[in-house]
Length: 323
Image 1 (cartoon, rainbow, N blue to C red):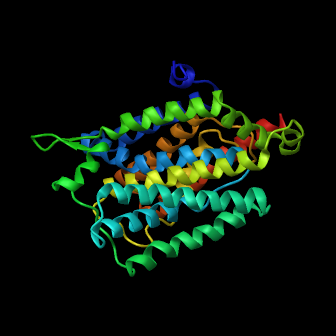
Image 2: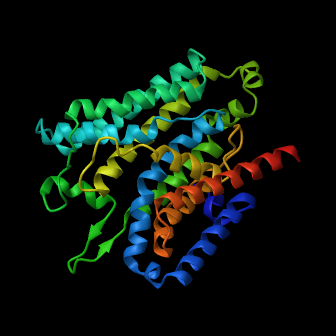
Image 3: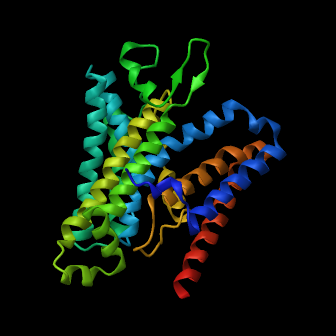
């Protein structure tokens, strides 16, 4: 009974984005036979895990009419801090995971206080915390990369949450099951709980929500805490997916998540959006990142096409609001 409508019946924007995903898969498969291989599917999913976790969280600040720019550099910083505790302080992997999540929540609380209590513009407030997180992890690690325990070691069993290697060496991307479960859960939270309803209400009309007796500051802060929580989880997913975390590698990750949310129908001005739509938007972004190189387009062209897709998504949102 967890949100039966979430995947069972796609409507409007979600159906359109799903159609775009199907069209992209057909196009890339036609232009490049190599794209149709199993390793390509695994590569798309590997890229989607940490971006999906970021978008599950950042959708809440976006729906309030705000934004969270700290999630990209944050996830790398949290993964560096967790890895430092494991590798250099001989802490258990569980402590490193808790450090990732705990740091994400702390930064989320800071963002929420800056935006909801101190009334700073969300862009400016989270840009400042983005700069803080960009320097925090590398400062602790001395500017060097950190490698979490490998899957071959006993301490590296956490990597099997996202990717399992069978006896014959085949990689099984089981992380997608976890992602789909989280999408369903957070979709239920947004659409059927007080937290979700008040988040949407704040984005639709903050003053009217306050006059209705809602503790707007609390729920506004909570939206950023949720974003920070999932940024911390994204740090764990990033550490589980890649062998080494390098300082400075998180710049632009937040744009993939925010861009995916907007492509999936989350309004840039707040008040409108779904978790399922945001998730489908992330799949579009990940397909572009993995698929465009197969047809001979370099990284610069990937950025150009991503920007064009985002412009189209924003224009659709503006046209719908005018109507």
